[in-house]
View: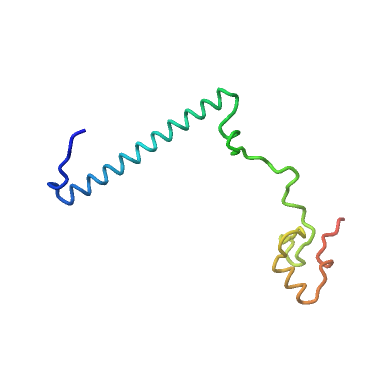
Amino acid sequence: MASVDLNSMELSELKKLQKDVTKAIDDFEERKRLEALAAVKAKAQEMGFSLAELTGDVTKKKAGKSAGIPKYVHPENPAKTWTGRGRQPAWIKEALDAGRSLDEFLITKS
């Protein structure tokens, strides 16, 4: 590698050299990372797995987990519902604070 006399360079040249070296280092590290990733993927595939399966990145659907069926409805706005799980919506809290019963908002099956 050629020796560079840094003492004879201007500040702008030094800053450009620093920027170029930083970019070269980043590019080198990314190239090596991608090579390592490709090698690991190939080895996993050779052994009958995907890399995601080995690292636990496989997205698993939660069985039986749903948004829930609404159990309570707002008396004036039927678009506002609540399943009865989780935090109470503001309209339920306000009604309970005003002395109303939760049973008043139950959705009745017809």
